[in-house]
Image (cartoon, rainbow, N blue to C red):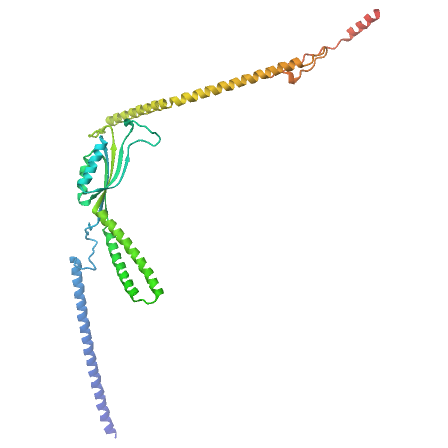
Length: 374
């Protein structure tokens, strides 16, 4: 029995061993195939990454086309040009006519205009020498003729000030266009929903949402139209000032040395001092009538005050004299003290007279003897 079991056990062991090796071989083959697939996919991904990197470096990638080392050109599709100009002219009316002629020649129009003849609102009559005419106007010129119009406007008179600016609205316009497409798609979806709704309450809520969307669409379209108009027609803010005289050539002061700077400073100081004296003289001349009237009024007031003071003094003296006459006569003998009410206001009070000295004893004795002898 043992002889039979031992060969069977050896045969089973050999069979199990061969099966395990076959399963291991199959697992290894499957693992190798998976590894080969992973490697191929990794190679594919690395090839894609390499291709993307080449496209990125060549500027062909759409999602990663920006590089900080490169300078991108500014989009100039929506540029709004504006200019502020100030011109001095000798013949104001002729200059205004030339400006209107230029506007018509360049197919522009006046957006706003403000004319001032130099007269104030407090006076009803002015002479021509006191008026200084001024014109403030905003002109819209086609952007293609913007530079040419500015050059022709400079030749009308003496250019005193000019400042230009450019506003780029390309990004805002692009954002508005994108937002408009989103709202329009949303509007279309709400219209489709509204067409299929049977319930009245739901229809009302959808209509409210649809109305809000349509209002936003109208605002966006209005802003886009304004941008398009501003891009098509440039702004020129022109100021025309009437002057009596101006010099075409600017005054050049040399300030190279200390002596030249000192000379220029002294000259300016002396001119400023003369200008101050001139203005002071004109101020005095203008104020002289008012000062004369004020002086006369003050003189009359002083005279009236003095008159009333003298009159009050005379009344006081008359009352004093009347009281003195009505007072009773003073008895002979001991002096009466003065009545303070009877003292005139301008007379200082007098001291009472000194009392009589008392009689001596000798005199009294002599008097008694004389009486006895009588």
